[in-house]
Length: 250
Image (cartoon, rainbow, N blue to C red; front, side, top):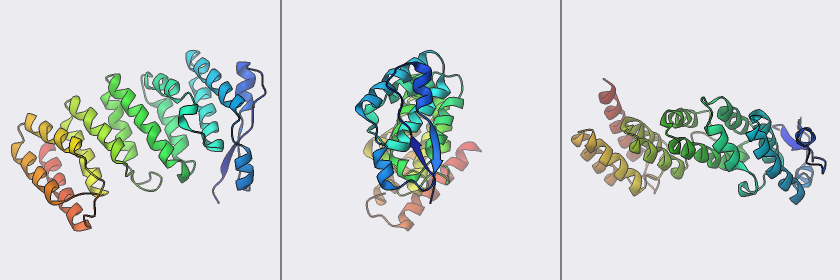
């Protein structure tokens, strides 16, 4: 059994240092489901976390803020909108490099597969923030991390997060990278929405790659990815995209 993380409740005081010490992460492989349920955050604890995390961010104690939010997610799995995630993500996204964002994402990645939906939502928050901040290269690094085969449960198969990547890359003139995103979607037989198709199609036309745009559009018409299309159909699109990428970088 994988070790689970337990969160010990803080003292009622809102003293910053004591509040951080109160949230202590330990590993215990024998924690039962009943014990995990008992560890659910109280309303008071949620209030305290919402008070402490912004203060940690404003005082540049980013690692403490990451550890505090991670502890809450590991143990209690509370609704994301109950925690100050946007404050934390927006602050981390302003850092000059990805050290702190990747510390947070990797902590979630290597915890447990049950956190996968939460991880995808937090990834989307980071990516959206990077694009808003004019940092598409950081978003690209997150895409490369997300599409690795060691991602929990395999390569992510969430069409919404890929749509965010495609939209952001297209708006920043990174059409080749949007094609690479589409290639991952096709390889995982993920539904390709109309907005993604139009975005990539128009991007290819702007790059004067008319033949590739028409071929891709026709292939996607034949293969209804993610809606009952077989492996052979997915393979056809992947092979086409592989040729496009190879020709592009020659």
